[in-house]
Image (spheres, rainbow, N blue to C red):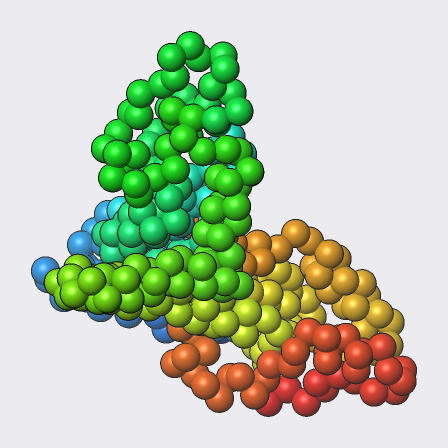
Length: 369
């Protein structure tokens, strides 16, 4: 019996037709491929029928061992597959293998003179992060326009800062370190051209804009545009009009993203294989917990306690998502976008908790179809 035949017989004998995630390894134990299926046995056996030149045939030529785990349902299998691929980066995987680069807008609150900068990484440094956004270049251009309008610095974090009430320590003052100070598009805390209080007010204005609580930057551009038109500088007024439209569109994108993410907060009931029905606590597009569908008063009390702990965990709020969270959120959003009928299985978290805390004889969301 050849190794391939032995492997096929192992799958034929032991695998079951139920949802799951499978892994293929080479002779040295290296992970080659991760996949998922709602019928694991049928899916695995199909690899052995691949023809010459097909990717599956090349994969099986190197595969020496196959492992699989059963998952209650397709939704959980999809998320499990994604996380495994992103963690282990198997050689034969294409989908999910490369981490997509997302852009974030970073407000560096921990700095003496905070900045608004575009970044592609999130680190626990006390800053606020807004995003993610799929178009890195567009975000960079918009952020540059925002800081020019508001007057915040965009120089490196290592640039010395000296507000005007500190200039007594610097005999003769300081020279601006960039052209923006000369052009009037930066308050220039590098050379004592502004006070700490005035700069902090501009930071609050930028933050309110990013969080959707204020139109300060837009109003600044509108005033400048009207002034340019009044002095008949129509070319500059047109440039300001375009800038206004870009900034307004960016704020709308932020608001739309916050709305979409916030809407992905509910308890999701999913029927499982052989009666293994589950509920998934989804908050801002991420699976925060999953547990068996409670069918008794005691089970509902335990479920409520677990969900209470989830609700007590820190939440990013308007500051968006971390990169490692973005992929899961986008995957969950895509699941419901492609399967809108699945939304009928969801219940707002607060509603589910209220029903669960009701009479012991009622089972919240008991019917799982």
